[in-house]
Every structure is written in C-alpha cells, then in structure tokens.
Amino acid sequence: QVQLVESGGGLVQAGGSLRLSCEGSGNIFSIKSMSWYRQSPGGQRELVAVIESAGSTNYAESVTGRFTISRDSAKNTVYLQMNSLKPEDTAIYYCQAILAYKAGSSWYSWWGQGTQVTVSS
Image 1: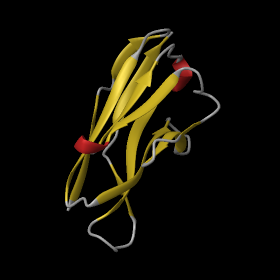
Image 2: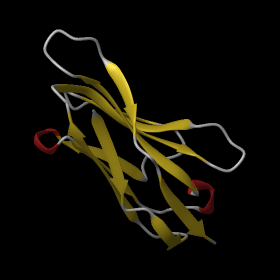
Image 3: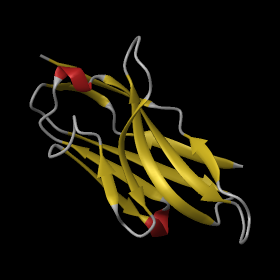
Image 4: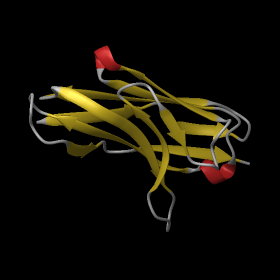
C-alpha cells in the first residue's frame, strides 16, 4: 500500500504565505511526477502545479509567479510554497503522485486526503 500525507494547510490573511508538504510512504519504487490539485466548494478539481522526476515544472496560470513547487526525491516529498495568497485560493489542496511499485511495473495514480487552505480578505 501507498500513503500520501499532506500537511501545512490552515487559515491565512490575504497577502500571506503557506507551505504545503506531501510525503509519500509505503510500497514506492519510483515516482514519475508529483502534483498539487485544488478543489473549491462547488468547483471542479483543478491542477495547480506539477513537477516531473527530472525537475521540470508547470503551473496553472492563476498561480504562476506566486506559487512554487519543489521536490525532495530522497524523501518522496513534494512541497508547494504559496505566496501572495488571495481569497480565491481558498480550497482543499490535494497531492497526487504517479508512481510504480516495482521495476517494470505500470504507473499508478495515488491521491492524498487533502488539506484545507482558507484565505481571508
């Protein structure tokens, strides 16, 4: 089994910062990519940022320049540094990993349980 555990969410005022962490554990042989998604009440889950195994990154236009995704491959951990937060960033943030259980196996998608981020105006 695999577990992805997010932490770092909370309540912050507009203009503030938060740093989310997501640590993977369990039966992980290799991780292809790790991503952060978010879902606001009544909204669809949307991609916020992704980091590939080689280190390349991609961001949603709405967070470009404010959020930074990084990764510690040795710890199977991904981070999301969120600066200049806005009320519209309020959502549940989910971590996702595309990973393999053993050499030569298929890639599988795993999700964390989510962490709430609330930005007050």
